[in-house]
Length: 188
Image (cartoon, rainbow, N blue to C red; front, side, top):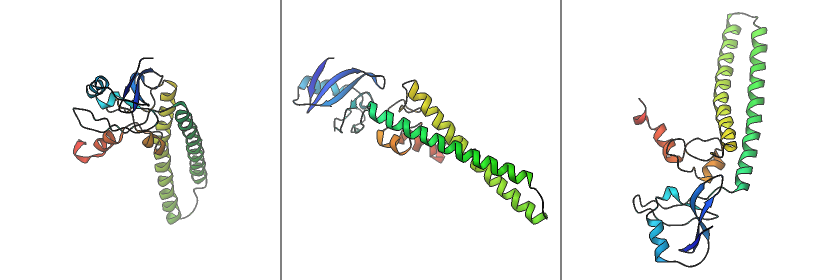
């Protein structure tokens, strides 16, 4: 591993399954002009920080790099959360489906009862459909973990912030791409 020191960080070229061959900043000491020049030429999306934030700026976008590299413990924790959420959604969907089936088999009563039952069925169908979308996203996230591509935005191919993954572990987009996707001006 080739190590250099920059702005209080040791720079290492890493070959992890999460971010192969991407420069990583690791807490260290010292600074050299050569390494500072090296980082100024690298877009911030290609630099990862291990363990804490840094304020190295990308010369093109002047964006501060504030993301943490996902370590094995983070990944294992997120995988556990995804598996738990998957079970919750499977149980919830299964329960809703059973309730729909019971309602369909007990379709007796006057027109008001029938209208009420139909309204409830529509609500259950909508809940099941929404849960199915989330369940599919969870399954996709688990598949990405197995392929070592988890945490990469499908929009820009940058890493999704660890804090965002902790909040919504099945997310497919970084905050910026999600905002763009939700912007009504971008929808046709």
